[in-house]
Image (cartoon, rainbow, N blue to C red):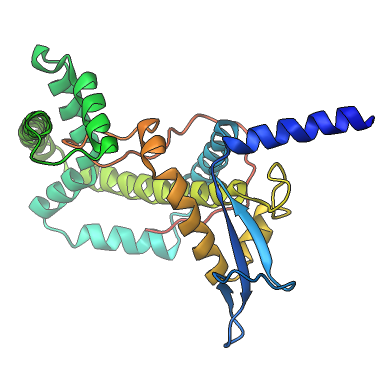
Length: 295
């Protein structure tokens, strides 16, 4: 490679670095022998430096696919092991519920889906056809640090409160309708439905855990060449001391939870529900270690 071409590549890298988001963490050995984050200005030759930055869109998609594969395997394994201690304990728990409590259990387990239905119903009304404009305006005020007493900000907050109240009321209506339908079902069907919901909820837990692991793996990069992953593989990252993993996760959270990231997220409006998990596209190939699932 010629010197001129090498210089051109270096210039492009410096240009890209101007727009790069992330931060450097340095780890050293504490007085108790455990790793600690170094905050002094004099790095030691024994320090370990890791660059932490938000994963690219492609890496995020890969993390979702890894998590979806783990979720699918975990749920399949749970349904196959009907004689496992977890499955038997779950059946015993449901058998000890009286009919009314069992109905409430099924209702509670489906609350997130019910709120989604309620939100969709409210958004379908003409009154809220400008909801996206409302959400964008609130983000702009929030990012600008506008004072709460600003009349325009106060109007937006009141409108957001009204939206949340309508979603809540619609959710209660749907819940009562669902309750009437559940009461008419035989107990055996309710127990089966409750078991399925427990498996799905546990599967979602597996999905989020694996997603977070892969996001952190992709976020950790070489301190000099940020295009290179720091860890050889995800197993190596997971074997790192807990203190290091916690510090890395906290550093990553600084960048994926900032206003710019929030603006591009699929979070629900502030008047409805909390942020939803990432989308879980279908995948046909399992590519993570076997996951376990509990009840």
